[in-house]
Image (cartoon, rainbow, N blue to C red; front, top):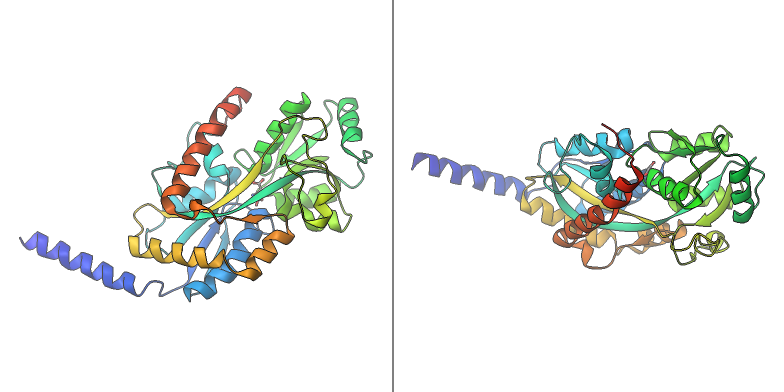
Length: 322
Ligand code: ASP
């Protein structure tokens, strides 16, 4: 009886505390380096979430191991609604890539809703002699064994896209992993690596400024953002059926109280309707999610479907890490 009273008291205290949620700053962990594509989405989102939820929202970068280090940090954080994770397709590809995952994707998180979808681009160092995709193909053929392909580690979007790219071109490249594609972009600009497959949120500005070579987009449809609209799709360029877009979603540690999950979900839905946020995303080629994947249950279903979609592709490629 005493035990029951105590647990009722504790749960009403927890409910009362949650009624005030959020009372202190919320941290969004980005599992990649600052200045990269996931970081950009997180910082733009934090700006608008701040207004919608009425509390400071901080972004913390925990890069490394293709996003699994940052995700593990959130899986193990206190489930109080103050530590969240913004992660991308790596949530679904890592389980197939890592033999020893530091968390369980479908069990260790509360799903809070999807955020956006972002196409990718195949880009090259400024000094690369190839001016278009056909010339790139010839250059790759001629330079077999000497090509450096940058990525953000096993489990990153750039890794997955690079993997599909190598398979489609039937050319093995030396992959150079970074903690995010922000540092990878620096080395691409400096000519230390040759090519990279990265999200438009990171490449659009550099393409517009003419600082890197851009060869193709990875979606089956051409993009509408003016600079990117000029780029052929991989499919048009002859790599039939090549289609990959990266999605981002928001997560909290498993056990985060329902009132906090609901408040974050409501704020997220409001944020994704914010015209300023939508405009910023569109300018970088990204599309804000408006469908039922905004609901935690549908978000989780989608991630599960993505695990089932990409798992066999990755296993067939024989890529693993411990
Ligand atoms: N999302 C990563 C980043 O922000 C890049 C990637 O996944 O390839 O750097």
